[in-house]
Structure formats: C-alpha cells, structure tokens
Image (tube, rainbow, N blue to C red; front, side):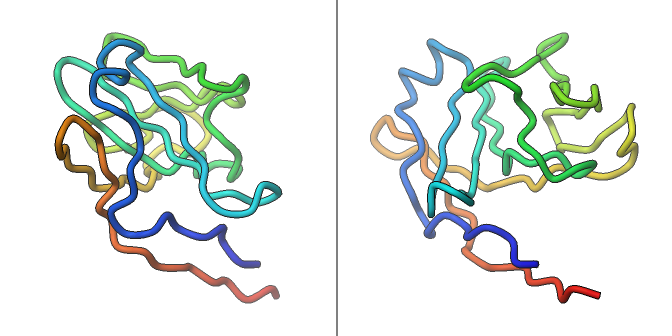
Length: 128
C-alpha cells in the first residue's frame, strides 16, 4: 500500500486573509481519486497545518467538505470516530487512537499567503 503523494515543497495553501476570516482551509493535491489532503487552522492567532487523515482509520478528519469540529479553540474532533486531537501538536488525547498523532506540516507566511514548507517524501508500506 502506498500513501498518497505529499504536496510539493513550498506550495501555496491559502491566503492569510481568507484563513483569518474562515478559521479553516482544506486543500488537496495529487490525483482526484487519491489526493494528499491538508487542513489548515487559524485559532487564537496561530496557524496549524496537518495532513487531513485520522491515524485511527486513515480517513479525512471531516465528514463534510470544509467543516471541522473545533472545541475550546484548541481541540479538534474527528467527525467519524470522535477522536480528540490537540491543535498545538496533533496528538490524540481521547478516543480510539489515544496517543497517536496527526502528521503536522510546517507552514510559513509570505506576502499574505500561507505556504506549506514541509519537505516532500513518500511512505511506502509493503503488503503482508
């Protein structure tokens, strides 16, 4: 089984003005049938970006496009199995994947745009 492709290094995700207004942006890269999904949050004047994939079941964290469940401005809930993650580090602190973590992506702001600066790489897992 091969993981979906990572976004290219330094790819534009969303304008800072849009992110500040909406609080969340969802992006996808690669083939439509198996994209690399990214979710970016703007909470308490901080930006957090993760691969949009729950470690419990390897499905997106949201059920409906663009809608994510944020609690107390610092906790994200997976819409499928109610796993709870801290935005600051992506670690699950409650639910079926307790102790697992979302894949955090590095971001930078350049000229009013949020860019993903995580280096591209692929994870390949051989089938049993």
